[in-house]
Image (cartoon, rainbow, N blue to C red; front, side, top):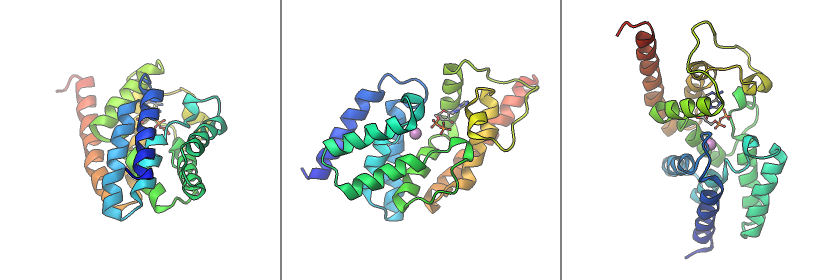
Length: 217
Ligand code: ADP
Ligand code: NI
């Protein structure tokens, strides 16, 4: 086995251990799907497979929702990379990706990502779309104690990060405040194509949802 294969194996075991009991949408299977998405996209786009796979595996370890602060989360990833012999260049690259790839209510659009960063960001965003994206939204909303839908509430425009995280939200509003915006923010051609299909599925789902809500279907 090469050093890189060993590092990836260790990363898988580490992340499985850390996230196996997570129920807020950052569970091990999310990581598994994002890693598979990332490898497919990386192959199509000619990106570095090792960087994409390792960044995808570690991308949610630093999430502020699972750590005391964003800085503490990033430090945890950095410590792991050092402990497991990842080269300084690869370490910096992976930390940059993990720090800047997240959606955060659309507030991080000014940061430019490397090709590998674009691949992992697309892979993560694909997992927020389609049938899986709907399941994760409902699971997250339930986890946060929020309602499925409230017909009186309208989607908020111009979200700040505080608004986005404020909890003044329903599962259906999250479609408008995040999910339906993701398609146009995809970086790579291959992910754009996949995102279109998954986006269409969200539209179809909402149409059916409102029809059932009004007892029309
Ligand atoms: P973000 O960067 O938007 O916080 P995450 O990857 O942390 O995204 O979110 C985890 C999952 O939970 C995603 O599927 C996301 O769409 C969903 N989610 C995030 N915020 C909400 C919310 N306010 N209501 C419902 N689902 C949410
Ligand atoms: Ni993620």
